[in-house]
Length: 127
Image 1 (cartoon, rainbow, N blue to C red):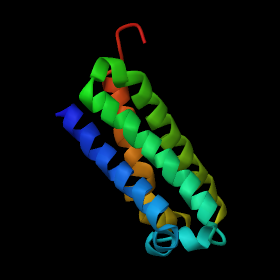
Image 2: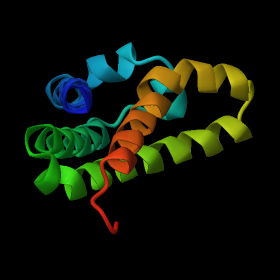
Image 3: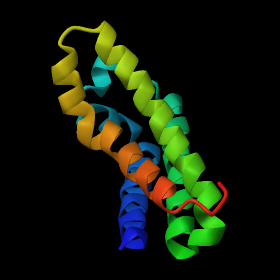
Image 4: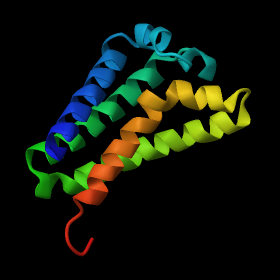
């Protein structure tokens, strides 16, 4: 079951990354709150899209071969958690922090919670 959850999360992260790469302006306009973070920069959106594809690869590797893919999963979870931490700071410093956290929860906070939980529950003995 955990491998399936990792695979579904990998697909979601890959879809987001591909959307960012293929249509950065459409992604920027479609994701709630993104225009509030600054001016549109297609290069930056595509850079982050590549990061999401890397996250997807780490999750997929774990889903396919858990023992070999666990280190990649932990790095994917780390990126997602670090990305969420930026949102925590931005939310805390901005107007309406609770509304911002609620808006961002599905796409920003839930993925690192899922990936981190999977990594923790499947850590190798001695890790």
